[in-house]
Length: 245
Image (tube, rainbow, N blue to C red; front, side, top):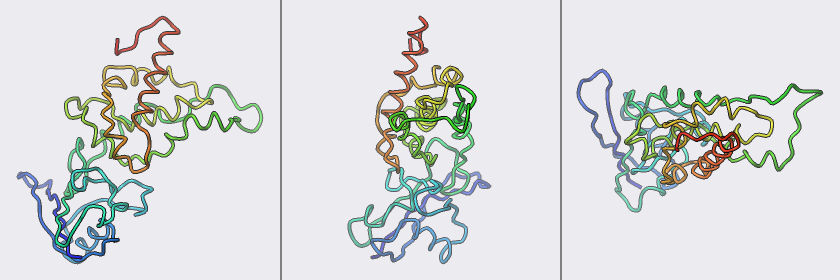
């Protein structure tokens, strides 16, 4: 079928603002949007810039806004975003991150926030023999959070960041939750300076946009609320107040 990919183009060396440029091409309904971008880059306009890597929904590098929604170009089929011959598919870079060129964004701020929550195991004690044992029930408490691929889709979709760019963002909280609820970890206290702060977990207003756009179907809003609850329990046990209070 004939489709039009309307792509956001911005040259960082230019002083002008970005603009949209249309490319007409023939794609099968079951082709991926990524296939269309690759064809444009190879056969029509070699200056087009976008990120891709595994092309199988694992690396998260080709997250972008497709028809106004954060998606992975490698998981979005033409038939998912078109209805008839000649339909226009508008493709833009992610929000809340500076555009490097065209559909590529600078993820430095995103990963700075990710690293700030100490996304690694802070063990409770030394391994006595071979390994730290964990029951299936204990593993299930943080299994959801392990699915994150750091694609930044949730960060782009989050309406809180529209007004508060210092908010740590959904992905960083998910990264923290992965360890906060790990029975082998004792790092909640070490993460509180970031999580229990005015720009930590508390700005989240439960819009659920992060959950709606997650390509791995992670219940992000639920994990954020569970983390809030865990922080409150920790503070109450010590007679302390949270940053929210």
